[in-house]
Length: 69
Image (cartoon, rainbow, N blue to C red):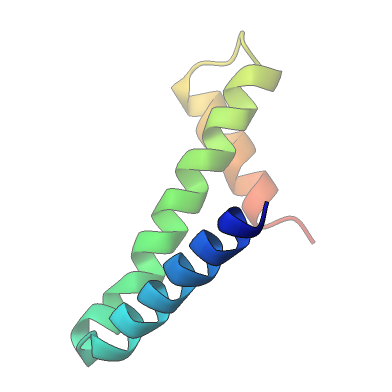
């Protein structure tokens, strides 16, 4: 298990270094990219829970999930 912990630390260190080296433009674009990726993941889960739903219904469910209060 120790090797796994070292691998995780190594991956985290590389992610941190890449983030530090990224231009301000890249950093600004990361927010929308992460949001889009999150929406795709949520929508995939919604598809599993609502197999009968068409794309329009899935989009509606996604909006409700993301913006629920």
